[in-house]
Each structure stands twice: as structure tokens, then as C-alpha cells.
Length: 506
Ligand code: GBH
Image (cartoon, rainbow, N blue to C red; front, top):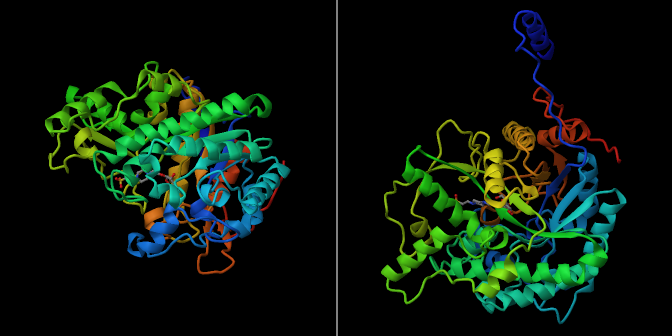
């Protein structure tokens, strides 16, 4: 196939100087390639060695029906016992970074920093040391959704004191692991925590305080992030020399039509989905985005509330939060087209009513097995371009990107999705976007929150029937390995995915 293309071009080249073979594009030498996981989704050992209960333990044990396949993360991929195999898989892939998260309630079983669980410190030390042995950079998320249940009972992200509790926890992590961990992510996906957990029932703690809970959370959570950031930069950064940032979920959205109304709808969508969390940190003005705040304020008034359901940032809080991130972490998956025309039957009050737009997914976009996840053409570059333009070209890491399938090792739809994402990332690099790394979600199959084990995101399949939780590479694992070693996207590579994966440590 390649030979044919070259021949075709050569024979034409004599007549048409425009026919030059497409230039090979490569990822830069210092580009970070990694994979991501999260503590509750992989660790298991939910009550071993002194770990405290978290909100996902509580939800899955007390509301079994909340999970699609009635499962839980009690054992999950059992990475608490299988971390050596996990690191072996990272070596097979040849990644130079591993993003994982710490379990707050494993380290601090009461939620508070009055007591530190030594077994948890040992577990994460062992993992970190094993990574460093093979030159794999630990990228550590402090909070990926598994809040200690006790803190939830005290209000969780609905209580402004969460900022102190989170700072205390962050300091423990910096103190014990910061000599070796140089890349910190405070919080994974504010939107999913606040909107899904407080404003609806999509995630634990399923509070469903629609139109109110998500906004209280939005402010408390970002202030908690900022407290952890300041703790790091004031007391650890000088001696430890790492970076600290935060990761947002940013889907790709384009206007459905070229009308003025759809352009406005798109902007309001962006403000509601991610800028409500990221503007306070990255915008010059600080605080919540203007148009979306004004909209909620107006609606609140019309709905009879004495003040806006969105609590404002004080000037002091704006200053405290602005600039508190050394990079912009992006989890990017899906995309949609946004329209100003809506059927207008939203729950009142609600986030959806406040945003007030509707979404379309063209038939021809490939669909995953997750209801929300489709493959929008060029979506990664659209998203990265939007962030560059809104925030003056920040340093960006893609901290998650991935695709879901059912069980099975031949995951061609994931391979197609990931190749398209890599091409889109190369487009972004060509356009001068300050993209520094890419981490695939996920190293292996894991507990997919309310979908349980029914949707699989792993480059490695995990056999959840097998007590040993055997991990086997999918085709996508071989394809990612080849990308990392050549730094080029090879669309013709069709690996024998049933062959043995080898390790070539650098
Ligand atoms: C990530 O979130 C998580 O960080 C990770 O833990 C998770 O396993 C992974 O994705 C795969 O889901 O269309 O209204 O149903 C991704 C964020 C979650 C955003 C699902 C869109 C669906 C909203 N996405 N959500 S809806």
C-alpha cells in the first residue's frame, strides 16, 4: 500500500510539483506518553490494612441497585496486590509516565490528618519506587472521586471547610511522597464531582440537589484546590521542585449552525461545562465566567430565590485562586454540536435549564458502548484550540483520552479512535499549541463507576472472574506501544495481538 502511494506520487511528480509524499509527522522527543488509572477503580482491598470507608464503598454497599451490573470496587482489578504486574505492563507499553490516584481514605482512614495509615504509605511508596526503578514518571492525582465517607456526612464539597481538610490531606501526600513525585494533580474533573455528585444522581454521593448543589460545590472545590496548590508552592516546591495543577473534563463542542444564536449557545455551554471551574484559575479577571453567572443570577431572581444560586467569589477569593496551576490538565473523550433551539422542558432549577441549549450527535460519528461517548472528527484539536485561545496558550497535558468496548481483545474501534486522537494531537502541535503529553485512559479495565464492569476502557483486558485478575493486552496496547517507540502514527500497522508482549526498558 505504502509502495503504491509512493509510486503514484513519483509518477505524477514529473508533471505536478504539488504531489509530494505526505510529510511524516512525529511527536517531539520530550513528549510525555503515559496511561492513567484511579484508586477506587483499580485498587480493591477496600477494607484491608486499615483503609477507611469512602463514598463509593458506601454507595455500592448500601445502594447495590445504583450500579448497572450490581457490582462494586471491593476487589476491582486488585491492584493493591497486583501493582508489580501493573508496572510490568507499563514497561511492556514503554510509557514514560503513569498517572494514578491516591485513596484519601486509605491514607487518612478518618478523613482527617489526625492519624496516618502506615500500610497505605507503604503501598504507595512501593508503587512509586517500582516506577522510578524503570524511569517511569509518577503523575499523582490526589483526589479522583473517592471522598472519605465521614467527610461526606459532614457535607463533603458542600461544606467550605473541605478546603482545610483537603489541604491537610495534600500536605501529607507532599510530605511523604514529594521527594519522588514531581507531578501533582490536585483534583480530577470538577464538573463530574459537582454536577454528577451534587447536582444529579450520576455519581456518588448522588445528592441530586439540582441547580444548587453543583454550584456550591463548584466554588468550595476550586478553593480547596487552590489551598493545596498554595501549600505546595509555599512549603514544598522549593525543596521538591515539582509542578502542581488540576485536570478538567473538556468535551468538544461546535455550533450546530453558523447562526449568532448557536455561537452564543456554544459559549454558554463552554462556560457551564468547564469554564465555570477553570476561569477562576486561568482567566485574567478571575471568578466565575460573566455570561453564565449573569444567567444564573437572573433565573434565580425569577425563581424567587433571594440571591443567586451560584455563590460569588469575593475579591480576596479571586486573588487567592487566580494562577494556581502550573499546567492545564485535560480529560478529553467526546463531542457534540450545540444548538440554541431547545424543547425547554428542563427541570427547574437545574444546570441544564441554566445552560438552556440542546445537543446533537450526527449519525455518521462512530459510537462506543458508552451512551455518552462518540468519535467527533478532529475533536481533540478543536478542544485544545479553544483552551489555547481562552487562556493564552497554557501548557497542556492530556491526562485522559480513551474509548469503551465490551470484553474482547480485538478492539479495532478503540484503535481507530486513538489514531484519530493522535493525528488530532499532531495537528495541535503543528498549530503551536503548547501540548506536552498524552495519557491514555486506561491502562486496564476497571470499575467504570455506575456502569460497573459492563463498559471496558482498558488497553489491557482484566479477567474479573479470575481471582488473580489476569491482565491481557488488547490490540490497542500493541498499537500504542508502537506509537510510543516510533513517535509516529502508522495507520497500516495491524499487529498480531495474540503474540507475547516484550519489555525493552530504556
Ligand atoms: C473520566 O470521566 C473519568 O475521569 C474516569 O474515572 C472514567 O473512568 C472515564 O472518564 C471513563 O468514563 O452524557 O450526560 O451522560 C469522563 C467524563 C463522564 C463526561 C460521563 C461525560 C456523561 C455525561 N465523562 N459523562 S452524559
